[in-house]
Image 1: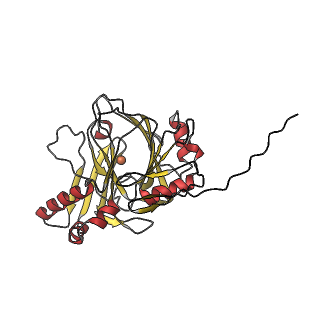
Image 2: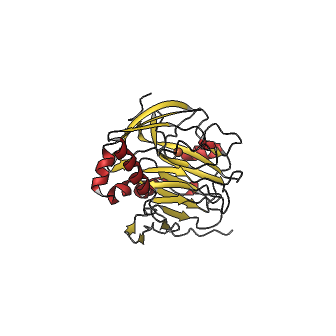
Image 3: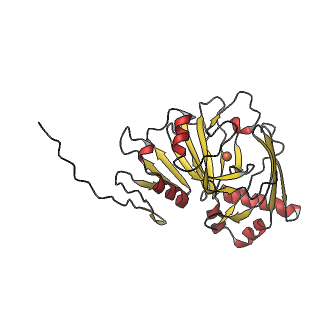
Length: 306
Ligand SMILES: [Fe+2]
């Protein structure tokens, strides 16, 4: 009879990488996973070998990476074949937001969409949960099928804490006077939310921006415009605040546009970032699944009026 020798356990390693801003925290206690920087913010982990599965990665260090860097991309891993399996995985991150459709939103273009979310149009910057009882801390996206090269459809993320750090304080002071009143009716809610443009991260207290970017009212191709009103400054100063804010949010120093590969799993910090979508070629096979995960404790929406 032969026996297999017991392998000697290898001690856990700390993975640390450095970018131009200094060392990145990579608290993954397994040297197989290298954490690399994404420009201008975020981190990525590539599958170390074919067949590696995202559920092999411990959640706590991944959660710490999202909180520190805003965006975490897991690329090349095996993911989930069904929405139910994705949802079960997301429960390891925290309590998922429950919608009338369940926990998994199927983001696929509809033939005759009643709302821009299911169109191929661009999606203005916003934060998730702004019209709901609770604001999720994390968004977890799985790319079931990429739209294909040259078809657009990138999900756009703006690092609002960086925007506030890097903008002239006099301009931030103007933004800080503005309050947005947002009203939106769609299939899943009919709500009013009031929020100052500049507020603070519910855990860290870091200044962040909460803003739903207006679309041009004459954009006839945009399905189901929300009703947005901004107060706190004279009208011409409000217009200037929109202009400077939009320029800062979309400044390449603050904007990451994620170009989807089939199989990508992306986790983002909804408390700090705003997000939107670049338009894509109508009919392109773009299919994302999205789950929202509540914070611990869950954050009641401070701006919801009804
Ligand atoms: Fe969203």
